[in-house]
Image (cartoon, rainbow, N blue to C red; front, side, top):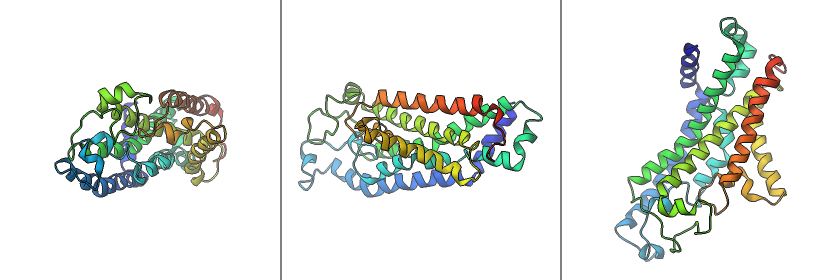
Length: 276
């Protein structure tokens, strides 16, 4: 049984989609470091009148890394999250059915174990490629500027004392940032596994990639129409936004995961080959 996990992880590492998704996220992250992090780091020891707030509040990681600023890098990564999450491995279930690999493997192991393995590896791959660029960016910023707790009400403070997680943010800012990165990774994994059950209903491989994107955009549009912007995935995953974040994340993460588990393991029990 362990051999199947080893085989699937090795297959993941040889997947072009995995490296394309990871490199895309890393390039966007590195661009932010080069054009924002490095230039800002010089103000750590030399405050500038051009950036007036540096005269009153020291430059710090929590207010300048990719997840905390209003530059395009972090925002575009959050919008690209479902596509990046799906690229590494989610398509392999579709391909295994088309190529007959699924039936071949299931002559030696149970379908239940095969699906469980596919689900776990798909989730972890989606979580890694969406979360690691943010983690790398944060770690890079730690080498460029000090990691000190933000000052409530300071000129550069963008969150506010009434925001959710305010106590953690102002007292344990590194914990706040790591929790935010974990939230991004978990939701990336959840988006990736939605592509698995989509394979039961489509007959073109590109639609496996499209479905999570449509679902993600649909969630954003629906929340926007209902006037509950804080429930939009790209909003509650954004650590720089002053909204209630935890409840929308937990609710939507659980719903997406429960639907994926039901469709893939329960409803999909008798659908092997359907739509393929």
